[in-house]
Amino acid sequence: MNRLLFSAIFLLICGLASQAAADTEYLIVSGGPAVRKFEDQRGPGEQHDRWWGNFIRTARVRMQEIHKTAPAGTRITWLVYRGGYVRRAAEEHQPLTQNIESVPKAYPFINLVWFRSTDELIRYINHGPGRRGMKISGFEYFGHSNKYSFMFDYSSDTYATSTAWLHEKELGKISGSAFARKAYCQSWGCHTAESFSKAWKRKTGSWMVGAIGKTDYTYMHERNWQVGLSPGSRWVR
Image (cartoon, rainbow, N blue to C red; front, side):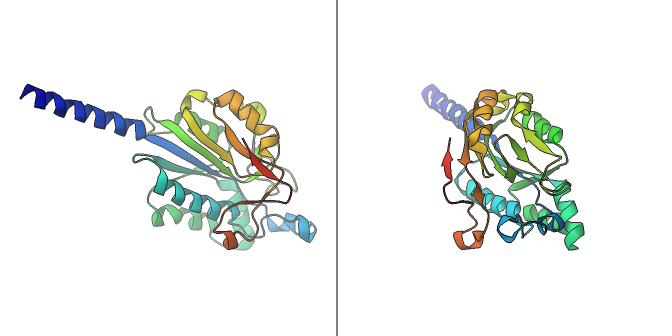
C-alpha cells in the first residue's frame, strides 16, 4: 500500500514538474508599416509596404504554427508597435488597429499587447505581467530592420528613417535571465545577421537567426505567408 502511495506521489510530482517546464512565454513582435505618402516618393522597385499588413499576417500565421507545435502551457504574446498602424490607418481611412485587435478574438491563444516605445517593449521582455517566473522560450521579430537595429516605424513618422527603434547598443537593457536556456530567436527583418544577431547573443545569451541581405515580403500569398529572401541573401545564426 505504501509502495502504491509512493508511486502515485512520484508520478504526480513528475507530472507537475513536466507541466511547470512547459510554462513558458513565446514573444512575437510586429513593427509598423511605412506610410504611402513617403513610399510614393520612391521608385517602383524601391517601395515598401504597399500593403499595410505585411508584418501582421505573417506574424499571425507564424503564431498559428507555434500554437500547433509548442509544448502545452506555452503562452503566445504578440507585441505590436501601435503608432505605425495609427498613422497608416489615418492615411487609408481604415480601422487598422481594430483589425489587429480582431486577431486574438479569432485566435484566443494569442495575447495581444500594444507597445508605444522601445522602453515599453524592453520592460515587457524583462518583466512581462503575469509571467510569474516563466521564461521566454522564443522571440521573433517581423518588421523593418538594418544591420544594427529593429526599426519599428521606418518611413512612418519621418521619410526613410526611424524615430522608434531597438539598437544593438540598447540590448544591454534586456535581461538575459528572462530567456529560457536554448530559447529560439529569429528576426524576419533585413540584414539582422550582419551585426545585430551577434550583439543579441552577447547580451541575452540566446542565438538569433537572421538574414544576411534583404528579406522579401512580396507575393507572400503565393508561399503561404512565409517571409522570403531577396536574391543573394541567406539565413544564418
